[in-house]
Amino acid sequence: MFFFLKLIVRNVFRQKLRSALTAFGIMVALIAFGLLRTVVDAWYAGVDAASASRLITRNAISLNFSLPISYESKIRQVDGVTGVSSANWFGGVYISEKNFFPQFAIDAASYFALFPEILIEPGERKAFLHDRKGALVGRKLAKAYGWNLGDVVPVRGTIYPGTWSFVIRGIYAGARKNVDESTFFFHWDYLNEKLKAIKDGRTDHVGIFFVGINQPQRAAEISGAIDRVFKNSLAETLTETEKAFQLGFVAMTEAIVVAIEIVSFVVIGIIMAVMANTMAMSVRERTREFATLRALGFGPTYIASLIFGESLTISLCAGILGISATYPLVDYVGAKFGTLFPIFVLARETVELALAAAFLVGVVAAIFPFWRALREPVADGLRSVG
Amino acid sequence: MKPLVEVRDLCKHYRRGEQIIPVLVDINLTIFEGEFIALMGPSGSGKSTLLNLIAGIDQADSGMLRVGGVDIAALSESSLADWRATHVGFIFQFYNLIPVLTAFENVELPLLLTALSRRERRDHVDLVLGMVGLQDRMAHFPSQLSGGQQQRVAIARALVTDPTLIVADEPTGDLDRQSAEEILDILEHLNREVGKTIIMVTHDQRAAAKAHHVRHLDKGVLNDHDAAPPRTTA
Image: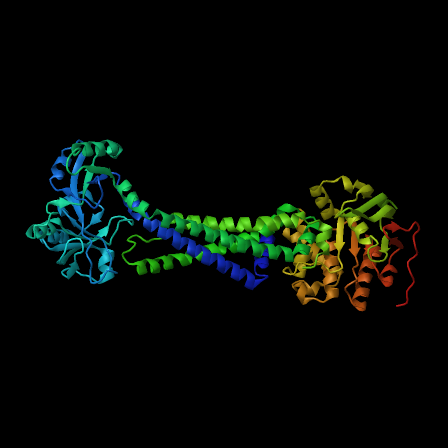
């Protein structure tokens, strides 16, 4: 066993440049694979973070149409509902358009009750709740723009006109890794007061309601009950689980996500061909050696252990190196994306998939050369010139 | 003396498209234990093919071939591989050593197919490398050895399992005269002193002179009568 391991390792280093370039190719492919899969995961991060015990109620026509705030008390009365909160998408611009981050006007007290995964220091929570112009920002967002408590942040409204000034009163963290830490929250009351002052038609309206339920398995039934309450009203509602709501957003860009997924697997296919070529050349050059081994009495198992062993050594070593290099690269790329992808981390599933791909590349690349080495008659192989 | 190799009406042909090319035609040959036979003949006469058939690395189309009483044509591929590992020692024209293994490791290679312990393997390898005079080159890789030294490693590899039969295909074909003499002396010694049966394919009259009998092949036909080894002047 040890003898064959030694022979496999020495065979790997026989053509150092070729083995190194092949390993480098696999490394680059797996890094690309890891990054692309991480982008896809980032796209679905909101879906993964969605709670099963929350529903979202919106205007049945589209998200562009709001709902009266008065609906809140009616929703609260539906059987199975444990809490209701609301939010408006603000869509403001901080300094320039490239500084994108989500901004929501919320009813803070009820929102925190429904979103326990948002962690705030008690002091900061109190300060935010007591300051009408206060803002609560995620840790990642604060870090990205260098904001500290007490800083004044001017935001130019695009949906709600004017320049709005907020004071950072709290910085929240996520209770889990997949909680978005790049959102900007402020008080819905502040927004509503300003709209009232200019007699805007959107006064006393909200974009969506968050609905807490006590039994996730009754989500469909409760959703139906809520929507029945507002049937034939001026603003009919559509209630769905938070996961379905998030999936609706992803569906809008599904073609891009699918394209990225396809490319990530095409990359693996290409490197499989490169590795197969390397192994084919390597085995072809050693036709006489394999024939000699067979003449000496070594059977297919030994020949297979040499060819598959060499192929797997290259692919798995390159795979481990590639995955190791992907971690810092994902951190770097995630930082470059800024708040565009709130959750940008290399998932364990991606690492496992990359390792499986490296293994598969090693196995597939060795199949044809092995078959060919065995198919060649020993006497012919002994005559071959390497 | 008992017959070791018995060949009766052996035929072998190659097919090139529609054309059938006979390589060996009705070969009849008996080689006794302890004999040293040289097979001679022009290129393409079929001598290497006959050697490969006797060594069990090629298949005849018809006829009977027994080595040590075993009908090797009837063996399955895996049984034949096991049989070769135990009964045949190979010496090739271009040595066929594994370049990434040292002389010691190349000789140890066939012993991996036996049940010997690591220590026993080492003792066997030490012994045969000593027999070919390469004790001081054990840790050298083939590229660090001369052609003659490489062929001596190959002879050690052929000997290490103590096979019944040694087949040598042009063992001196790639060597200078002095190295060739050394190799032939080792083969002669193995035959005379150790009693090994050797079948050697060669073009070299000097090499054939070391054999007890010389058989000539021409266009796949073996001459009926043994020829006396040619006399050469050194």
